[in-house]
Image 1 (tube, rainbow, N blue to C red):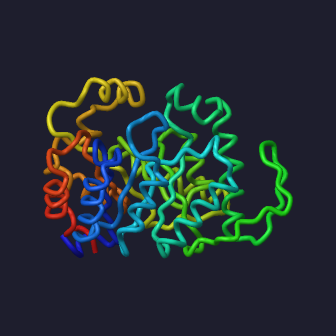
Image 2 (cartoon, rainbow, N blue to C red):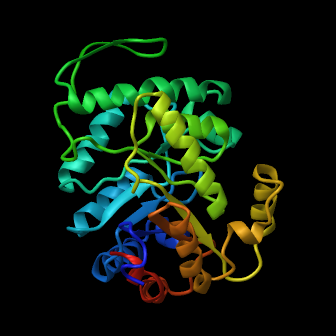
Length: 304
């Protein structure tokens, strides 16, 4: 319903299943379809031990096939990565795509095997993140960087490729109090998952408070949500995850039971203050081309 909400709504799509695992024809068809239909962005997951493509490879593939579609990882693990090399990779992606990268970083999923892959203990991830991200921001904007911290020591560090976007906005997720504090102190945008409109309304208020305390300001249109939708009963593994993370919540309030409920849910999130959305099917659609066409019919009228 264009004009109903006084915000610039943007709709992206997260890919899952076989399409995300590297079939070039299938993935290419989805990327081309999202660009042709007018979606704002494509989002690809990161799991070191999972079947999905490495997010940098997937985003590079998407950048090469499109001219308008934005893209981002949902989300890329920062602890364990060399901040100089990752800053160069992100700057290169933004440069080669003419400013279409949406970098989103996190601490990593609560999975021992994933922690092992990145080589950072769970208890050390937050401190690593808190030092690495500000360092990367300096590398994106300064010609020469001197830094001596508890984890990284740099003398005359350079990233010669600079992003097109100045600044290169960084997005984060999370809903726990510690995560909201980190968003307020370090992030340029918030994209949580498995949340309700009330969660988003309360989270925005908390983030603004933390940003104010840090002397920062976050663009009021940089709040959103990743909305997962199902096609049938929720799998047991997801129910267990929701029970562990949010035991006081009804799973039906956190995952739309089918695609047709997404529009009304997005409208409720817009009323709560969000304007950037990523919709992602919980399972593998039988026909991705048909799926994104239906999503376009249902949702893209909200963009404006």
